[in-house]
Amino acid sequence: MPIFMDRHDVRDATAEAVAAAHQEDLKVQAQHACKSLTYWYDEQRGTAFCLIEAPTAAAVRALHRDAHGLIPNVIIEVNPSTVSSFLGRVTDPEGAAGEPIREAGFRAIMFTDMANSTEITHSLGDAKAQSVLAKHHEIVRQALLAHEGREVDRAGDGFLTCFASVSQAVACAVTVQRGFQTYNLSGAGPVKIQVRIGLGAGEPLTDGDTLFGSTVNLTARICACAEPGQILAARVIPELSAGKSFGFKRHGEVNLKGFPDPVELYEVDWAE
Image (cartoon, rainbow, N blue to C red; front, top):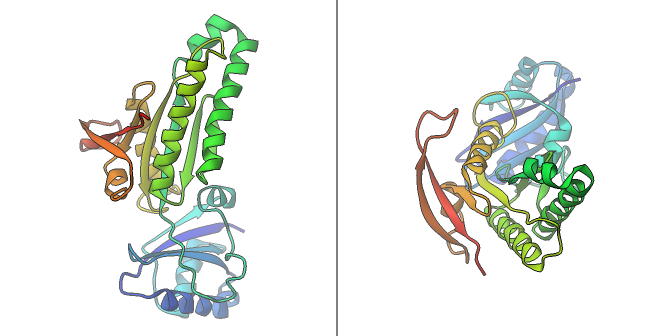
């Protein structure tokens, strides 16, 4: 049976009220051939996201209408493995047992892209190039592990990753760049490795029909704008990093493919 995620605007609700609504869903779910799996609640932004196994999106609406009357603003069908990759779970947290879940669906996104990988393959040959690529993967994954990042997807020489907080994402990006700097200065490899990094952040459902779709697209475009060895970030990143020990400088407004208006970008200062 398909699995759907929906979005509710619940700006004036409490965590207890959202938990009570979830319990009402559980009481009537069988009447609509649905199974309410879990939810995420962001008190700061006033949003809740439900994950429901259901025959159709209409059944999800009917379930919520009969349970508590809170009709979702958006409903999309999702892949449970994708939900798990971004949000870490597809069921209630262990030990929740009806208690309010105070876990936001908001995530920071980091894209990395290895520069000049094609040239490296041509100059070194496939075997040596694979060893360079393996070192690249190792450095990125060690940084993800150190900063509680999740590897969502990997395409050749790049990573799509996510974090529960913006500060974790920025710290990870800095660790990645410093890791490659250390590796390059050591002279241990046949060539130097440089990466571009893009940072963005957003909620699971904002528009379209893809989980974190607009945020992922924006972050990918930002990454493509970065120079090798550079970290570029959407404006939301420095805004949510206030009080942290990160250095940002304004990069300027950039026209990005697929986005009608110029996007203001910031560069992360990752020097020691």
